[in-house]
Image: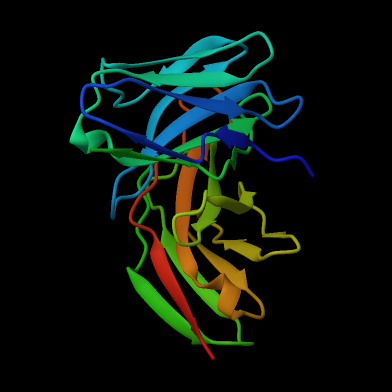
Amino acid sequence: AAGVIQSPRHLIKEKRETATLKCYPIPRHDTVYWYQQGPGQDPQFLISFYEKMQSDKGSIPDRFSAQQFSDYHSELNMSSLELGDSALYFCASSSREDTQYFGPGTRLTVL
Amino acid sequence: DAKTTQPPSMDCAEGRAANLPCNHSTISGNEYVYWYRQIHSQGPQYIIHGLKNNETNEMASLIITEDRKSSTLILPHATLRDTAVYYCIVRVKTGANSKLTFGKGITLSVRP
């Protein structure tokens, strides 16, 4: 069965640079969630979209923004990167906010 | 979302059943119990969920007490590949608060 696709899988950036993470949900899924997992931490919810509209917002820094496009894929844009942004970023998708299925994640390293 | 309480760790022998407990004493009537696991920095993997009836799928069984204040995830024949952090999460199924709130989870170690 098709799964959630995230790209890139690994990303290395310098401080103050920008990064864009992409998420391609499971076909026919209309809801996308973003989670951040710092080293040794548990995943923390950032933001979600349902039918291309923001549906919920967690502890997402103002430097981050996200959107869901007409084909339901989503992008997480991160600007003015800080060392503390180094983390795993997971995207999950669901159908009408039902059971969430996670992608493999993007490992972001900020130097 | 209601909070859940899980022991920090447990272990079991390969081939034996692993019973992972979870307390969710403040669960609301419209909240489901979900279980996910995370194997070493991989994306969390959905296992099973339930509202009030016991549930079983190809991966595990979920036993929810009648008062819904606690539940147990059962892996019937644990293998080394089941070593992971298991998260018990309570959430509403749809709507603006349907995000997953991860707690500390329980680290299951399956020994040969």
